[in-house]
Length: 448
Image (cartoon, rainbow, N blue to C red; front, side, top):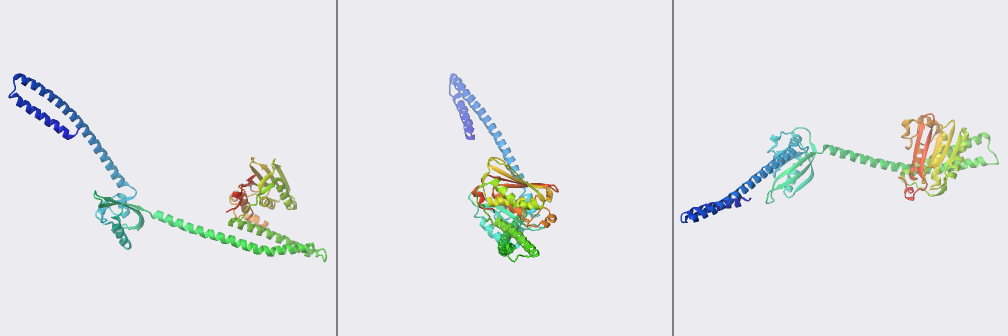
């Protein structure tokens, strides 16, 4: 009940009592009795209303007490949040003089809280930055909030640190600024991380540039080397084919060595060229329908002479119902040749087997298994990296650039496939290639 209504009811009761006294002086006994009865009834009603008003006032008092309690809880909560916040909180007047500071702020500034009050905040700014700080304070009067203002803070003792400052402006009812609330956060670790990231990004750019230069150099040098080697191989073949003025046995042996060495160098250069194309993203697949069974047979027969020279048993097995696939015959042949030549190169006794089968209606698999020297477990994770070979000591005698498996891995990825290896040192290795029957153009255009 409103206090004015309550006062009006009390005033009405007083008036009725005064009227009753006035009436008793002039009225007859019967009139007095009737008037008394009416007055008592009105007084009774008024008292009941007063009781109702009293209950309402008590209820309102209880609500006010609860509201005060909640306000006090919220006030204490705010104080706790202010006091125990992990970041520094400071309240200053519009001149920058500190009014309040929490524990984190006192720790950042290396000053007890009670001694911070009344100190100008500019005392903790380096001398060379104070003019800029004063200029910013003047601008703050026209701003509601300033976000992530980066400053250097100088504690009373200790080392200066980088800080991110957010300032909020508090105004009075007329809109005039009365104080500023400062949130101060130490961002030394963030600045160090940013510097590290910038250094890494710069290093990455340098590495990318170095990779481009290396690929460009490899491509140029490979082309320059291939031209004279083609001449050496060509003239060597012509010498060996001569029927008139036949070469002596010794001369023929020397020319054969020149021819074999030239072919070997050309094969190495082709690997380098392919690797340079892969790194430059210029290696592409020429997709066409092909018979995977025929391709595997032809490729295996092409290299069979190398296996026979080492008295190895070269086997082929198929489990294919639909042999027609969409792929690049030249690059698929290159994948198989790389795996077969490696298997024969690192196998002294036993066999090399090629298996082809259908994984699903949409995917094929090829495996090349050997009984060779195998690969150590610690080398398996690096086997497809450029210029890496499984055992540097054992493989030096076989030659090679260490690019064959890296190129094979890139080619298989271009075919939307994957290559894996299982090996036991001293017992042999098996390379698995899993690829789709139909390679999509969008994936075959470029690798890089």
